[in-house]
Image (cartoon, rainbow, N blue to C red; front, side, top):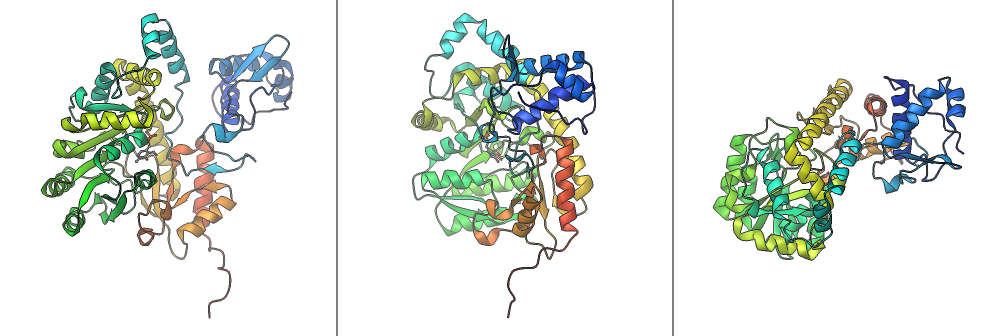
Length: 465
Ligand SMILES: Cc1ncc(COP(=O)(O)O)c(C=O)c1O
């Protein structure tokens, strides 16, 4: 039996919920392994100075969330199979329990466990549906799932015929699907000079050459895109026009029109990654709506609803539908129908929008909290963003700052990770405030970064002569 005593110092609200929350973060951080036995109700109550009833309610809540189970003769034990933190990619702590990892662009935690269990019960009660979800589906996804995709995309201000949509296992798979349908090895693809690292992985896998484009406060500079297209045969443009990763830039309507015009003039396909769009409801309609005949529009539920569902959609030009479906078939035959069914139900009955609203509120609170400490520096942090981009002041270098922060238990990402060419790496760091386990961890982390920025960097090794 473990000698676990939850740390409630930074938790407010009813004690039983605080204990259940503490248990959830300790499970997520890898403090426990599946099967670990928890203290008895009486033992924990005695050690914490609370009533046995409070511990019983806490354990009942944790059981409802699927974290623990109980059996006669075995007591209460950890059920959630996170055991080792690397199995549940929510690495807010290392194995010593002291690293606050803000390197992943995670949506802030929200409590969808209950909604999922409700939905799974609905599906379980639907016998006909259950059988059909176990069967192979059309590679592009079944019609009702593609229709749900069209409904989700409509929230971003673009009407799309479901026949143009393929269902994917998230946006990363959507990028691979679109690029595989569009390109051949050796093709050149333009992107932002600082871009989402997933495009570098996809380009390497598909044998594509990436060209980074100059950026300003709105993202890609249309003149730079035009100049590149004049210089050679560019097959496609991959970009994130809303809440760009990593700069958080959002293109205005005029900028979108200008970029679409260049693409149209040179016949270059647009691969638009709009994964953050619904976190920024004021953003103009998608870039793809300015040149639908050239565009492959990618979205997913990952940042807005739940990344673990792996629900994504790609809407391409009508004539691309077969190639997109073939790309899905080649990679995985079809996206897993059960989780797509869950996502489609949530989109159709408004549960997805309710979760989105909660995510937005939590993201806004974390953004405010982060800016309260780091907002005085040269930062970019578009409204709705899940991260902050900070230009580190002299004499710091981004990589030295990241190394020093890590030594103090906080992981952040220096600009090199996003640079298409090494020379494009600015002295900036990305801080993913959505990834902190809770506000207390976020406060600790941003204060470490601020303290470092206010201090002198360590002396560099060796004298320069
Ligand atoms: C810009 C961008 N595109 C795509 C992805 C991957 O999304 P998904 O989890 O839906 O595959 C991410 C994840 O961080 C991202 O930031």
